[in-house]
Image (cartoon, rainbow, N blue to C red; front, side, top):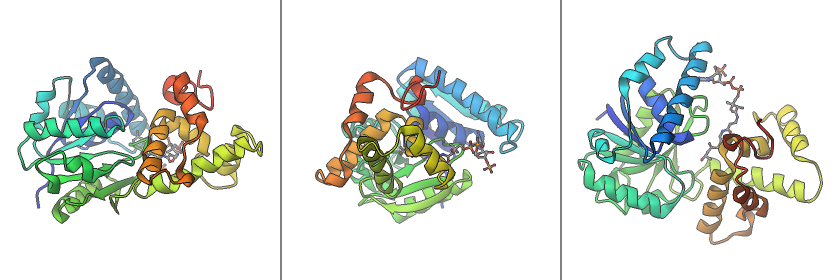
Length: 286
Ligand code: 3HC
């Protein structure tokens, strides 16, 4: 079965940069594309810090940065993605119209054998696949934040995704040191579906004045055994990203009340309080 040796990653935000870092540091040729050179520069610095930490923790070999540099090309020239002939993973914002437009462009650029994967958190992989002439070669490959540390990768089978592509992507995830789990193409897949109530109930606790942000997080961590409480996790993921996922799952389930977004999420997005990445969310990071 075909293995992936030339990979493209589209979008150099937190997830795209993390995915490109993981793949390039594992010794696989990677092209990371973003429309913005500034975003690419920030991504490079973030990758450097993460690799340093991985080496310090002895999770990565001492020459991991050299390997990454040798394998990674960062570019704002879309056409260079045509060289990533085995697999392209998109990690652009959670906007279906944007993703479909991207896949249409990639479809025109890349050979028909190239597999396309979306790192979408919750959107329909089937709908994205329908924007291409290769729906059997389009799947979801959903990583978790922080990519370097989180083991799980959801491999999502769209309505037309072939078994062969599912196996190829699962094998590739294992090669990257991750644990793949296959899921059907349903809104939020497994993790983001279950996690809706983790965040939703936390907002309700706040509304009812049961406990404040820090208390909820502390209890969930120290007594609940979770690595992070709901509010600090939202700050890590990004309030905007989490809000987009909530909206997407809510709408995909025809506005089912249990998935309803919370007005606080919208307000924080409007204020630009997006969590760690902007220095302010439920907590202050200055
Ligand atoms: N490269 C490789 N390994 C690394 C690394 C790197 N750059 N940096 C750290 N590691 C390793 C560490 O050595 C450690 O390994 P060990 O457990 O075998 O010793 C492990 O990764 C954890 O590293 P840290 O000690 O730095 O991490 P903490 O113990 O402080 O935990 C955390 C940090 C991993 C973020 C933890 O708090 C956690 O798991 N939080 C929850 C995160 C979560 O739930 N993410 C999912 C969000 S949902 C999402 O992303 C979906 C999207 O669609 C919205």
